[in-house]
Image 1: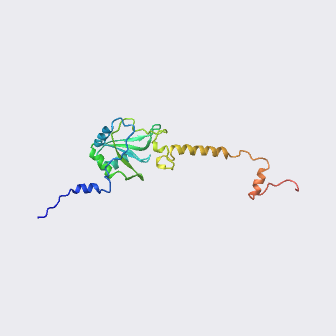
Image 2: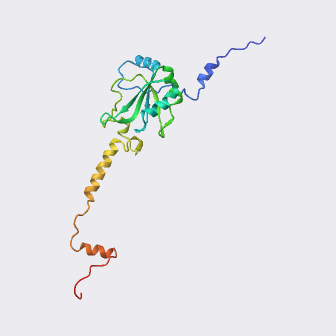
Length: 205
């Protein structure tokens, strides 16, 4: 009899996995989280909350309910707001009733399109009052402070670029201010260059 060695195929699958698990959270850790690394890991292993980013400022809570309810029953949605204007600024928190539903959402909703934008989801240790407001100096999200491209769905220019554009426009207006009065004799010269008839004169010359 020839002996055959047993083989654990699960080890082979783990070793040669090419596509990472879709329900695995990122390595990002909120720098305002108050707790140890062990507490963070424990919270993430049982959380029912997702952070959702890259939203359009015009995406509504109703749209979010329609999309995220496909992964499970939603407990509540907390819209991210500008600290100054109290208007949506491109993120939200979605709370499910179970951790499993949150993982399902990571699998099937993360990376989909909403209002023509690829949305990002990540497990979150849990919403606390105050986290719904942007942390940028302008009141919105920090990422929008430094954005250099024009993004209509996220309010136009990033905050820093918007200030540069305002300053450039102000300097242009100061440098190229329209002349209120035309100096004597200048109107005749301008008309002749444009091919307009010169005003008629009284007298022979």
